[in-house]
Length: 219
Figure 1 (cartoon, rainbow, N blue to C red):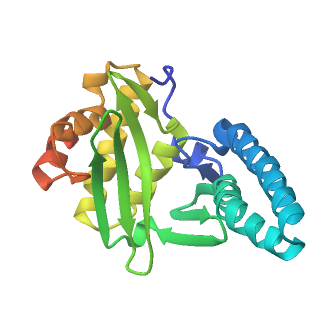
Figure 2 (cartoon, one colour):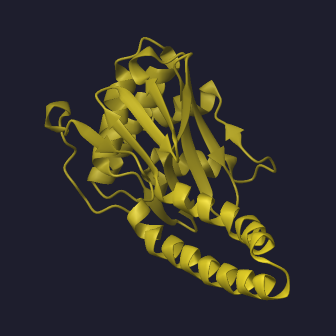
């Protein structure tokens, strides 16, 4: 769990806040190893095909064997989510999405149950939509968004007039308070939310208004 920290005031937030639950630096080295390994194996395969057939067939084999894997790996490296003011910027490879939290038309807390339970924030402003991982838990341990990221999301959602956005903002504020005092997992709204859906047999569970209200009342 996160170390005890003082919850920052809104005017203390930097202009741009990272919303990446798992920063690319944590898996970048592994991705580069995959690219290198695939590159070497592809070169060997191309050499054998070139020796047995000809160069253009070897080239086709190289593209078919390594192309998808390398492109997928490079796309993973160019993946980030940031918050500037109330606008979320999500970069996925060559694609970029922008969603304004203050103009949210749909806000949902969605849990993906399993051996590792993940809770996401789904937000749409009618033009675009993003799914933001908030936390993941397994056997009482887990990883949560940094305090600055949760503070920024809470403030952005609070700028909306949508009831669901205001409720989600309150849940995140309650999460901040729990993190600041280094509360146990059961005292953290995001963890409690995943436990509500842990027994579900479905791929994802969207929390009902009643379930969100229970998380709001935790504060």
